[in-house]
Image (cartoon, rainbow, N blue to C red; front, side, top):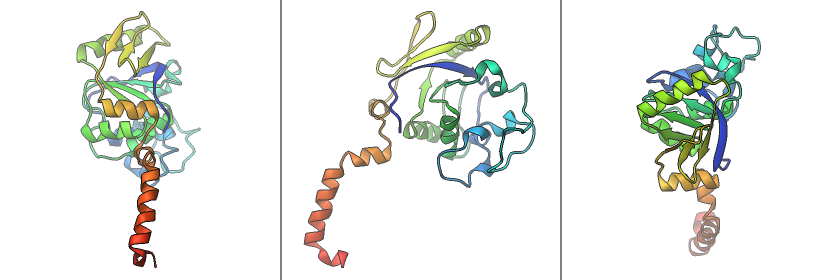
Length: 212
């Protein structure tokens, strides 16, 4: 996965609690396990006025003009601002796949469902926990200023506002190291490639009958 160190990105505000994974990517799109191509169907039932289907070209589908991702001011957003218990519901890994494929690499929320939270880190998304009052202020600032951007500095563990205000956040040291280096589970395994090859060679000599 891509390295994450620092990002200056446009913010899109989803002012809802308890956004579940079926809202993030509805169940009919779970047939594919490619990890890509889910972006057009992110928040499908809120984003469009008809029922989406896997493999469908979304270009000409009727869109809900009131939904934030259909509004010109939020096009190209990379930071999703939301509320409590984001990513609740089923444990589908397709939810972070859809967010990442759309272009979101950072989420700011008061809390997350545990499995979704873990899946974000495994797929290169940084889910940041901020207090409710801080989020309230950010929602107000985003609403008041079209083109509102934040800078996310993972090394310093800070969300930096346009006026220079720095909002600290906590992140597990191991997860931080993985994001900064772009290590997913496969990448972490490949760090030990030499030891794995050595073990396999030794086993082939000591237990040749396993390879007959």
